[in-house]
Image: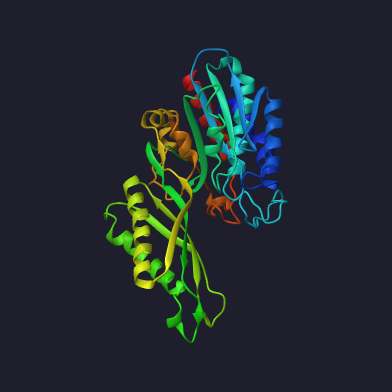
Length: 384
């Protein structure tokens, strides 16, 4: 893809933005320093309508004064509780926290776009909204942003987002219509039994034994209740039970996730979790409770809009990928307005950028940021 001269001139500032944000990662909704940096930068670039939403999220609006569509571009702001091991000179200064999912790059791309908009606003039709969203990695910041009006005034007609992905070579992009990321939920299961001395288990109700049986039977839901052609994953990643070695566990708690691409499959899994608990109540005498904590719908790209975006990228730069089992709350924006979520490749074996997302050694070549800005600029130009 040919890069505009205005885009190439942003190279150093994109790197500066990314490295500052990388040094000071913050998590969840507690991204005040990140918010302040973003607000100060967009003010310098001529954005006068700036709102703080969802505690520390930022909405920046540029109105052209000319008729046209209102386009929104979204970046996530939060890092992860990971101790960085990259060894770079701009490594995290916040102990135990790291931008190990590329959100520093996503924000840098949006700040680069903001600079281009500030310079080229006279050539733009319609209005532009930049969305910097907290808490993508935790409970989800998209819904609070929506509830507080991020898609209103001006009313957004289409929204765009992207994610760096080390599964794809640097210089390539995946822009795929339809479902590209799974719907997912985080859930807890609590099992209450009755403690007893380890020498007399007959006097208790073993919550740990019931939990082990639950985990084993849960995998049978995938192999016996879900049609073979469908894809789904259920994971129990954490279990707590018992107090001491010679006491029958009186209670247990499990933490897990459900991931699927299809609503019917997702419902089947949830229904069977409840049925399994009901069965254990009869067979083991326990009391079970299922609770859903966080839910993200599937990321489902608008077909017409996404084909339009793909047409703005050189064909030899596009790659096709299977839908990913990871989740993203960008999907909530897509439930309100047409949206396209794309992936920018950042795998570069020659430079050693091969570690996966969320790794303590994840890093990328900052040249990829130019491609992100150029794609966003091409989208704006196509609507102007």
